Image (tube, rainbow, N blue to C red; front, side, top):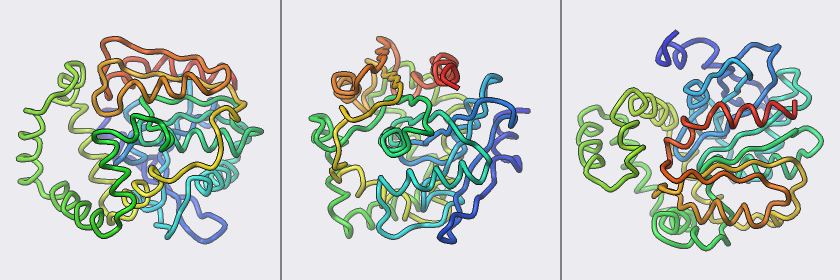
Length: 293
């Protein structure tokens, strides 16, 4: 089955009913007999990202955060609240212990699951992750723009609605992609995004925004909100991968985690960018998590 067939399959379009009546969308990519790993997508993104990374050794389960894709929006949602959603989804699927993998904007969500569910999260992997708002790089450049928008609801609503309109219009997308192709980007990412991976990511972004901007708006607010706990409090086995050539989330964010999470095993790849680090190291990432299951 091709990646495009996979993301359009029934297994990639499932929902679970949560205790409060909301729906949580998920893509279940592997056999139920395999070790389970919950995958938390980037910003923007959707559960479909997990379908790009299917490997035989694990049951990778991509999850739409509230307001994205198939998941019901939740007004005022919080980072801590997401951990409760994952616990409920695991119960729905009959899963006891599991791994978590957070990529880019999904990094804080993997961290909070490890913090709030230490008896269920066997191990966690962060890949080119966004960090807590006190990390120095979160207050510079593109990340500062993102966290600033999180504090300006009117501005982010205007900007995100414009972005959604562009993303869902084929003609405007072609123009935006042509402009983006001229922007600086890690060479490894340039090659990936010109091929099939670029089309798959576009499908995921469109799925993320299909029903509205509630998901990305809530994420922007959450990324600039203090977590209320320290990385030194994390106690489950942790792994980190970050590309040194990443110009979207600077590797200094990865080093912020590496210096503060107890016992973390860190990998900084000299030639990888923001997207290539996930694909080039996916087998190693998943195998590390599965070793604890």
